[in-house]
Image 1 (cartoon, rainbow over the protein chains, first blue to last red):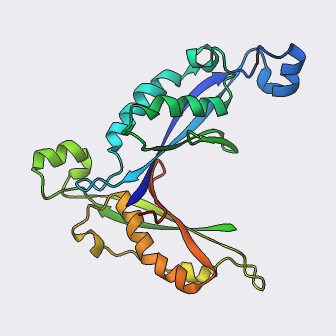
Image 2: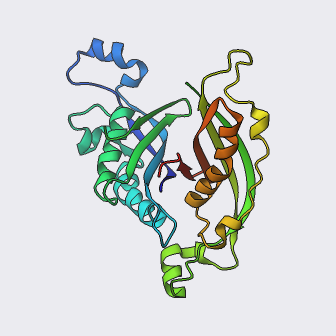
Amino acid sequence: MKAYFGRRYSFSASHRLHSDALSAEENRATYGKCNNPHGHGHNYGLEVLVGGELDAETGMVVNMAALDEAVRELVIERFDHANLNLDPYFKNRVPTTENLCRAVFELLKDVLPAGVLESVRVEETENNFFEYRGE
Amino acid sequence: MIFLTRRATFSASHYYWNPAWTAEKNEQVFGRCANRNGHGHNYTLEVTVAGEPDPVTGFVVDLKGLKDVNLEVPEFARLIPTTENIAIAAWKRLEPAVTAAGGARLSRIRVYETPEIFAEYRGEL
C-alpha cells in the first residue's frame, strides 16, 4: 500500500538572477529587481515528499531521522546562509528557485532508498513556490 | 475536474512501538517517539475530493457531509499509529461515505502531525 510522507525544512540564502547569456539590458528586462547586482535573499521553505510501501515493521515510508540527516547534510548545510550564485551547482545555471528545486531533488535522489523521492517543493516567499518531480 | 479540500483538526496522543522488537531496537529506530508514556500532537486533517460541480448546486460535494470526522482508534490496536497509518485509516473511514454521497471521489488525505511533518494517502494499493 503506497503512502506519502512529507517534511518541511527552512533555510535562508541570497541570490541574484542574472544570465551571462543575456545583455545587461536583457537581464534587467527579464529579471527586474531580482537582477540587482548586490543580490537579495529569501527565507526559503523546503518541502520534501517521499512515497512508497509502508515498512511492515515500522509503519513508515522512510525513517524520518534518516531523511532529516540527509537533508541537513546535503541541502541545509550547503545552502543555508550561503550565496547561491557562488555554489558550484549554479556555476553555469541561474539560481532561480526552479533550478534550486532541481538541485535539491538531485542531491537527495541518490542517497534515499531507490525510487522513494516523489517531489521537492521550494517556497521562495509565501506567495510563490516551485515543485520538481524528477520528470 | 475540481479538487475540493476541507481541513479539520484534532488532538491525540500516541507512541511508536513494535512488540516484535526488543526495547533497545524500538528505542533505536523510533527514538523519542518510543517513549511508552506517549506524547501528543495537534493534528490537521485535509480531506480532498475530486469531481465535477453539480449543475444545479455548483457543489462538487456538499461540505456538510464532510464535517463530522471523529477519529477513534481500534485500527491501531495492532498497527503502529504513524502519521502514514493515520492517513490510511482516515481514508478507509471516509472513502465509503464520499463514494456513497455520489458526484465526487476521494482524492487525497493529508495528515499534518506538526506544521513540518505530514503524510498523505491517495488510495493507491
